[in-house]
Length: 101
Image (cartoon, rainbow, N blue to C red; front, side, top):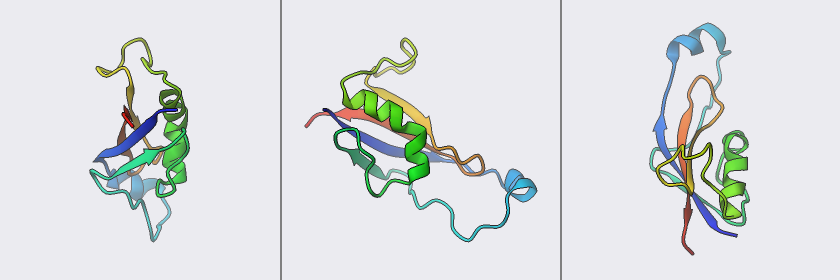
């Protein structure tokens, strides 16, 4: 299995949607821009949010198995993907790529 690096590249926030639809919460995402996680054997890195993992799991697992080229050439690097977590109020975009051992 290949190792896969998951890097947080962008955070967005939609205050208008939060105000209109979200109940107040005390704690949101802990991910910092530039923060990286390493997936070994296609497994979720312990530090990575479970919700974000569910958004990217199938891509990471496929890359770890040596696959890629999602959607017939979507990414310039065929052994990568750009996936956002499923938080509709403050999504984080992650670059997922195979790395050499």
